[in-house]
Image 1 (cartoon, rainbow, N blue to C red):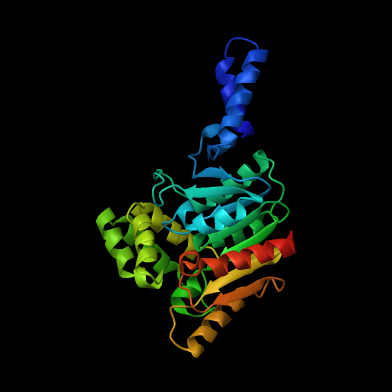
Image 2 (image 1 turned 90 degrees about the horizontal axis):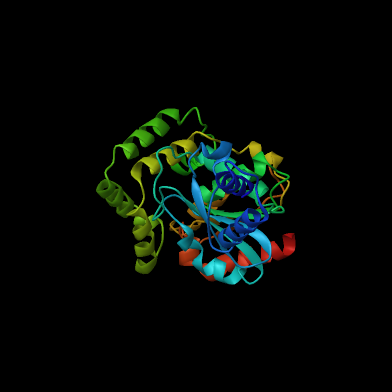
Length: 316
């Protein structure tokens, strides 16, 4: 936000010294943005495109909520209703996902850097970071990259390394999946919007259980940008945080979902896979929901809200 104020001030004082009235105007703009829709500041004096937008809700300790692939802040509707009376929520919408317009250079690495800049520039004191899926990966990434800046981490069915989800083995590495990562990136970048929608509908039953929830997921998929999706998947398959999470100092909770499986052996295997990703961070807690599918917030919102609230109350 400091960068935004600096830019506005420069524009209003190109040939004269900043007056008291100019300062007053800048202050009003700052307050208006802080209470409404806030666009993430670009780094390096606005040379880089904004990778996300932010909506503020509630008051209290800051909590950053990051949606997953092809999703937006709508996934947090039930949880934000529970948290906003006690916390200041920073609801992230990533460029190119759902209704947030795409940009020419989408980058999850830039998302991470801009989120860290957002935390610093808005003087957020060790915010909680809650993420779903890709957003859960981002929560691990933020906390392992800047461990002194993050207050607590909650990942909702998002792992430090996505590769084992495809292979069902924690033996998988970035190197062993490099060819597949490139293929997936190219496939999505060549897709039309209609093809992306068809691809999303094909796997919809693994995302959520009810028809209503599946329709909510599909609505967001239909408005996502295929090239952004491909770039994001490539980044997820090319970054393995399983050792990096050892840097995390904050309390950490991983909420997993195995409701898509049919028998106890499959549920147990899923839990072992998730637990295996947390070996480098023994203090991290894992809780599995064996009834819910990937969008736990749609399939079992009461369970999710209960886990999040209890963890925050015990950790903060």
